Length: 123
Image 1: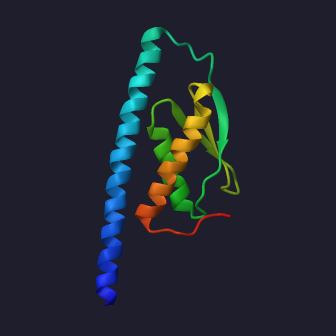
Image 2 (image 1 turned 90 degrees about the vertical axis):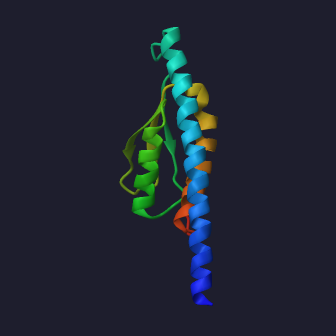
């Protein structure tokens, strides 16, 4: 019985990881096209901003993984992590995308936590 539960849990994590991979790949490609279009239009970075993102996880390696995923997405760059690991400082190419960034990154983080099998998050 315990082995069956382990197999089911592993299978669910694998499905969640696959969903995360597909979603993240779509977001990277979409962001790449948007940044390419900005470059073609001659965008000079007049509307960039630095924001704070608060990760949901309390584990260091989850936060670092999210930090790197943010940096892999065109148009956003993780700049620094606060000493208490409660805030990731992110540079955005377009300040109008703040709400979309927070919403999308929160969704990616929830998918990441589900695929890693972590249900413990900060309150």
